[in-house]
Length: 227
Image (cartoon, rainbow, N blue to C red; front, side, top):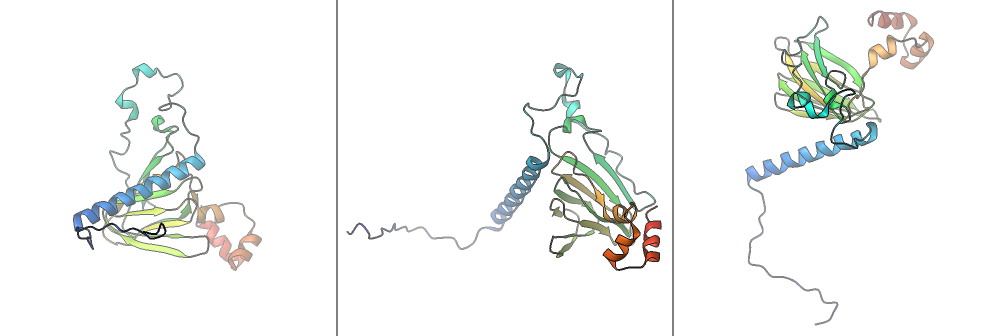
């Protein structure tokens, strides 16, 4: 046989043309979770300092006396009842939960009253993944080319917002509330609410009128809405 002649291995085993449904679902879920972990670990490396110990011990704390209570947060037990704005939120941050320090993650619980919106905003220091606990939510994010990616989520659905991109969530159901949990790939992802940061700040009217091609009177009306 010539050394350049390829060899083949014969087998009598049939090659499956499709996976069983249960195996396919398991594979899909596994790939989704791996992708999520990769996203969160990538944003964590880029934004939060890495620990050189197993976990961060608060100043003045005796490590020998720490137990499971230190790693437990109970502040979400009462939910996050919606306020007069239609949106209620409770954040799980390092300020309230010291065990998060150095972990590169944080959490938020949001409750949407019927027909309410979480206005377009960004998180400059971390990606976000949301899980719909109850109800239905319309969500969307816009990339750097201005393309909108949107979907209507139901209870049990998951959606991810890439780090720094503008996004929103809305409950257009006029009778039922919606609840979601947000996880961030940073201990402090930050929030820039676009309406408030643009029209509730001291950006000169001349800049806003030219940027949005609107009148000075319209700018003043938009500013008044942020007070």
